[in-house]
Length: 107
Length: 152
Image (cartoon, rainbow over all chains, first blue to last red; front, side, top):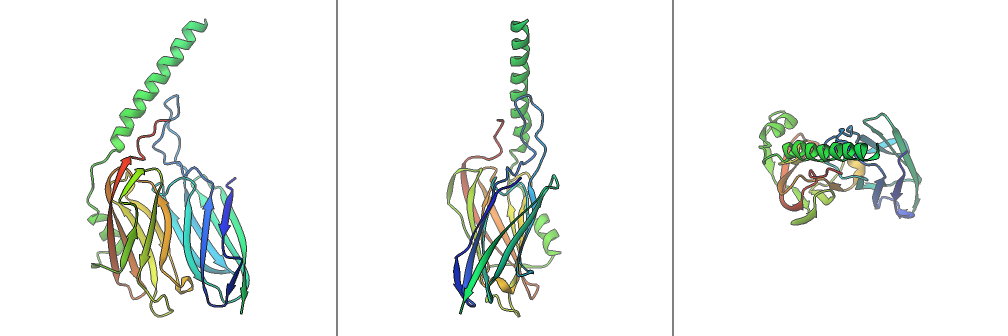
């Protein structure tokens, strides 16, 4: 359901700081809004997200309705070896999403 | 008949819009003290102001999406790194905006995201280091259009 995009540098030097950016398409519905007929729109936000690099957890987040729609996250990590960066998240409705990217490490 | 049902629909829509404004007004909270939430998150530990910097526009035109960067001074080594970062809002209906969990692999304790703000307020960021100490930083943001007034 959610389209996501990861931005990482295509190549990094071993041990170099890598800037990781993630943008997910998700309404992050707050639960405070009403539709045109006056019915409340149920809350549905991405509530947890985890990022693993070569299986090891690098970053974890608990989000709420205070995060803007189409959540954007940026953080840093160090890469020692070429590998796969995997993001996984779940929202209040139970929908899971994931996205992966490869980081190539040159020595 | 067409005229009757349209009138009924318009009446319902108007009622819906009025209801929305009335309910949403409840969401326009006054600034609330964050001390109880901070005490709950830190387990009543002492929090020292410092090491935490917030980069956020001084004036945000639209509270729906305000870019925020949080930086915590830390070597981010195995022995000394930032474990958790909490973003707290002084005025949102849900004060705990987000929690981020880092580890030494991060290399730098810096997070960027976009937050939703319910009007002009003060944001407080708590950071816990691996040695258990808590640090805090805060920033005042003026918000021209609050994110909580959205009846569409």
